[in-house]
Length: 96
Image 1 (cartoon, rainbow, N blue to C red):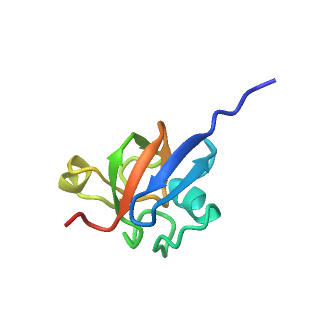
Image 2 (tube, rainbow, N blue to C red):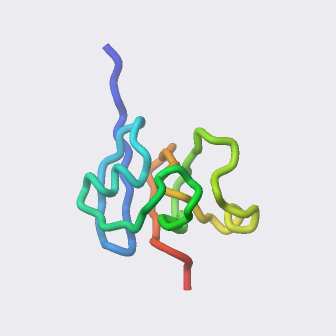
């Protein structure tokens, strides 16, 4: 029998912690946990859901989501197409 390891995500913007199943995007997990994270297209193109990864690591199943190289270097992610590899802490929008 295979064991599924749950990870956690913390939305700093909402002071919310949720569990993430390996098959759920970060956005889906946040929404299932009660988050009101902004979103629209859910395919990595519109950038409505952009946030900054403050801790942890994510992966994408697409080669390059709708982020610039500079944004990726600064830790920005698109939760609608991001999958957590470790426990993560994220913040909505651009950092001040």
